Every structure is written in C-alpha cells, then in structure tokens.
Amino acid sequence: MARQIAMIAAIEAALLICAGVAAGKNCSECHRLQITGNDFSAWKPDKGDWQIVGNARLNPADSKLLAAEPGTGAILNGPKGSTKNLFTKSEFGDVRAHVEFMVSKDSNSGVYLMGRYEIQVFDSWQKQGEYPGIECGGIYQRWDDNRKEPGYEGHSPRVNASKEPGQWQTFDIVFRAPRFDKNGGKIANARFEKVVHNGALVHSDIELTGPTRASAFNDEKPTGPLMLQGDHGPVAYRNIWLAPAGPNPFFAMDTATKDDKHKTAAEQAQMLKELGYPGIGTGYAGVDALAETLKELDQRDLQLFAVYTGINIDPGAKPYDPSLKDALKVLDGRNTILWVFAQSQTQKPSSTEGDPRAVEILQELAAEAAAHKVRISLYHHQGFWLETVEDATRLAEKVNRPNVGVTFNLCHWLRVSKNKDAKAVIERAMPHLSVVNINGADTDGKDWNTLIQTLDRGTFNMRGFLETLRDAGYTGPIGFQGYGIGGDVQDNLKRTMAAWDKHSEVLRGDVKVFGEPKKTP
Image (cartoon, one colour):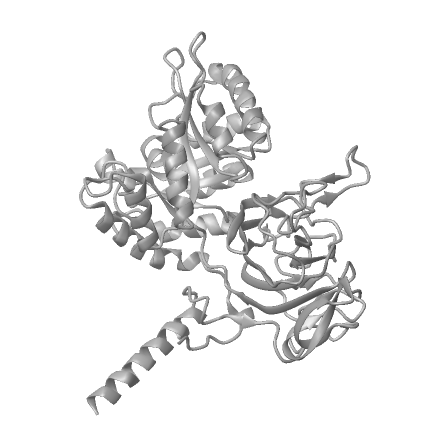
C-alpha cells in the first residue's frame, strides 16, 4: 500500500509540473506537439499530392526520385516529387522544432518557420555551395530585384553535415519570432537562436531582417504556420514536432566559473554542462587558450557566446591586441561576439571627444570580424572611457556597421547611470542590443559586493527587469556576471540557475498553441 501511495504521489507531482506549464513554466516535453504521424490532421487540407507513407528510399531505377514504402509515419511530396507547399493549421511564434527529412539526388526543399524564414533542405552531400544559404542547413538568402546583388543575407552552415541522398537527416532548431509594439511596428527581428544539422551546430544567434526568398508571405507578423516546400524536388519528412522555445539562453561569464576546483577550461565546461548552462563568455587570454576553450566546449555541445577584449583610443597607443586577427580565424563561422570595452588615459569617461578615434578603430576591427562571421558588442564598464550603456549606444550608431552592437551590463548601469529608468535605457539601446548581463544586486548598492551577487540574492527586482526586456522585444542571450562573488562557484552557479528558472518564467511566452500539457515518462 505504501508503495502504491508513493507511486500516486509521484504521478500527481508530474501532473502538477505539467499543469504549471500552462501558467508559463518551461516544460517543452510536456507541450511537444507532433505534426507528422498517421494522418494530415495537423495540416491545412489543400495538400496537393502529399501522401502518407511508411518510409521512403531512393528509387532504384532513378536516384533523382524517391520511392514510397507502404505504412504510416512519414509524408512524401507525391510520386513525381513536385506538389504544393504544405502548411500547418496552427500558427506559431517562438518554437523548438525537430525535423527529419530525406532528399533524392540533387533535390531541394525547405522548412519555413512562420512560412517566412527558411532553413534549406538540399542534397549537399560532398558539394560546395554556389552561394551563401543554398547548402543544406543554410539559412536561405533574402531577395530584392532593386539591389545590385539581389540575393543577400544568406547564411551558410558552419560545417557541411549532410548525409548521402536517400538517408534520413535531422534538424533541431530554436527559433525566435520577430517582436512588435502595440501599434504593430517591428521592434526586434526574427532570430534563429540555434540550428543543429545531424548533431552538428551549424548556426548560432542569426538575425533575419525579413522573410527569405520564396517565403509564402512578404510581411512579418508575431505568428505564422510551419511550411514545407513541396515544389522543388522529391522530399520526405517524418517525426516533425514543435515545442515551446523556452526563455532566452542563459550563459555564465567566466568571472563566475573559476575557483580552486575549476581552473581549467575542461573543468569549467564540464561543470556548466552538468548545471544546465548552454555555454560561457570568457576573457581573451590569447589564441592558444581560446582554441583550448573551444575544444572543450565543442566536446560537450556548449557554446562560446562571447570573448572579452578591449581597445585603447589614445593617440600612439596600440589600438588592440594584434593577436586578435589570429583569434578571429579560430572563431571563424561561429557568430561569436567580441565583447569590446574601451579605455583611455587622455579622455574622461563618456567624453565624446574620443568618439572619432574609437569609431576609426571599431570600423577597422568590425571589418576584420565580419570576414570571419564574428560580431562586436560594445561593453560599457564603470571607470572606463566607454562607461555607460548610453555611451555604447551612441558609439554603435556612429560606427554604423551591421555586426556592431551593444551590451547592457546591469551592475555597471546600477553603479554609474544617472537614468534609473531601465525601460527607457533598454528601449533606446534596443536597435543595437546584442547581449545583456545580469546578476543579483541591491537596488541602492554602492560597491561591487552589493552590486554583484548570485541571482537568488539582492533587492533589485529581477523579474520586473526581465519583463522590461521582454516588452522591449529582446530575445538574445543573457549572461550571468559573477565577478568577485567568491566562495564555491559550483554552488553559486547552481543557486543562480535555480533563481533563473523562477525569474525567467516571464520570458517563456504563451504555450497554449501547443495544446494541453501532457504527462512525460
């Protein structure tokens, strides 16, 4: 009887967890919505020649076609491999998506989030792409006939992870929908937070300024249907499911990951993996250390979100570490962010007299970074020439490069900013905002001991601040600043993650479109 009571209690606890999801808690598995299966009930009825099949394989008589096997579980775009595009009945915004697909030799299809933003499906087996985004796993280009080069903003995958035609392949995608204000004006672009192709990370934090070519809609909205392209060649899909994307990615800065037990990159990466952090932001310590960090992160499917380095705007001073040019080669294709602070011995903090030299340096560094698909985010720091988020925003606007943005640092803002209206500051920075750093803090704190604490401590209204970020349309990464906290970093990070799970409920969005929560095994 005691055993039965314990089992019932466990079941009730599981149901309570899932019930909590309806109120905003993150339980993607509870809300997983299966799109493919035994019928087309999830899809709009105008499906053309799409058919339910048990499996697909290369046609033995013609490798450019697929042959169907009887049964259920998969879908095929007709015997000729050309039919209408397929749309889900439901419309979605932020999603986590899993897609399995098969193409024949030289075939082509696409998975369109919101019917607008395409992840390319293509036979890229042992092939070089003709232009950025054409490859399998690529984010397809946008198109404008009025441009000198009408195709633009295509993003090739970091690696070619394609399998041979006739084999099942997988995409795992985290997508963020564009954001709009109450009047319908767009305040944030759509974003592919992560795309994994056959287990390999091929994209990280890619913004899209508008719909890609061949999208079903030319406008942008908060939600839209999932679309499968059916008219470009033979393709089969199976096991497509969607789930809530959850809150913004929450990583740790290396100021929070080092102590006597966690000195090496391997020790820190393993701890972050075990605690559920998706990655780290590190200080730049040279090319070799950077390469070692990347190796340890890659082995654990973690990301290097940002690398902290600086510039000096004084005349005659070395503008930045010359080894950064080699570091950018190591970071090639990762879309990592260089956190760039700016110092001066001749200019006072926030002095605009230093702007021309800073712009010159940053435009040069931005060009080097863009050649390797690396971004820059201006890191404001108390006591430095680039001291406030307002300084960073002003400078980003003057630099005027698409890969140069702004970081908002909570502790530095609290210490030096005269404007304590977070809403106004965030909205002003928003067009350029690429990273936000947070930590527990006392609202009236005067020193780093009170302004930098673990996330479960301090009087600052963190939940309200995250609501401000949400309402401003921010969907990018959020880092935990742990400078000078001391103590056991594993315990600090564990308690911080627990606090993040509570605070970030306000970032989880509406999950009703995914249906009633289901009990997980």
